Image (cartoon, rainbow, N blue to C red; front, side, top):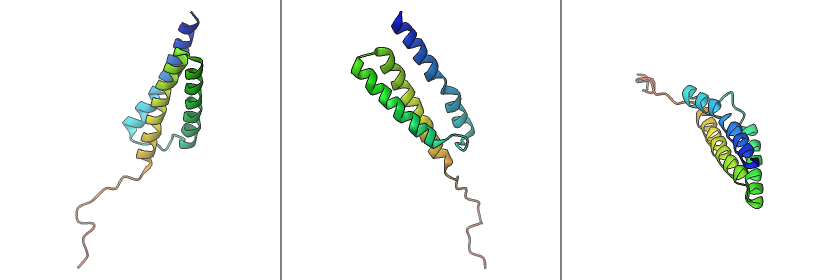
Length: 97
């Protein structure tokens, strides 16, 4: 029963990142996502994962592995979409006569 509560808590906290991930993917914009927050958060999740491994707790290991994966994907998308998109317009880079 205790592990079931842990698995449910882990599932809910992991699923909470799905809307942010989908928004980043759909809008192709990471301007509303704090990279610092996700770096700090990911560091905390890594420590929770290490803790879970040390105490051999499946709910902690599973939940934090999935949360870390999702957090890192969000961070990668944030950095990818934060760069200005370079668009080439035909004729604009040609020297003027």
